[in-house]
Every structure is written in C-alpha cells, then in structure tokens.
Image (cartoon, rainbow, N blue to C red; front, top):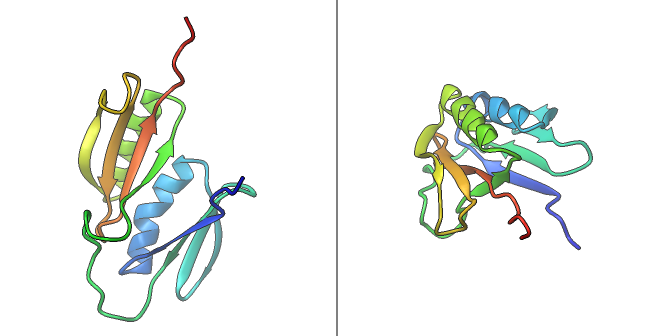
Length: 134
C-alpha cells in the first residue's frame, strides 16, 4: 500500500512560514530536518516529511475553494489534542476558520478545527475514534 512520503508546500516567505509551521508541526511530533535558501523540512521519524518551499516570484496567496490544494487533516488521539493544536496554531499566527467542534455530518464521533496560514494554506486537526462495538 502506498503511503504519503512527503508533502511540499510553497509559501510566500520562508521565515514567516517557519514561524507559523514549526510550532504546529513540533506539537504534532515532527522534528526539524534540513534547510537551505529555498526550503525547510520537518520529518516524523522515517515517516512523512513536510517541506516548505519559497520561490522568487510574485505569486498570490492560495484561495480555498480554487483548483488545487484543499487542506490536510492531521488525525490526533483526543479532542483535547484538537483544542491544544488549534491554540498552538493561533499563537503562531494562523487564523481560525472553524473553532473546535463536533461535525455530526461526518460521523457522530468527529471533532475538528480548521486553521489557515497567511498564504491561505488550510490545516485541519481532527479526532474521529472508531465506533465502539456493541
């Protein structure tokens, strides 16, 4: 089965991207990886790597709902972890799109929040435990 190996995200300013992504990714258990003039990375052991890139052009921020990136969702073990990560993101300068709450349209157990960085990159923190067997 193929798993996500890495995710590359282009941001408008690499240092601003570091300031916003680093607190969130380290709270999720990622560690700093390599960096150069055009990229910074974080990894989760031998698992998925997340890389921020920047380029020297005049691109505009991403707009949610346009073709392309929609969002990435990080599954966490508890509702409290959703709330904690949401607070970490806000402290790092992300904007709350949806505060932590239940989403019964997905499942009666689904609890999530959504945040967006200044470049329009949207992240979801979600908890959706398996249904208990009767």
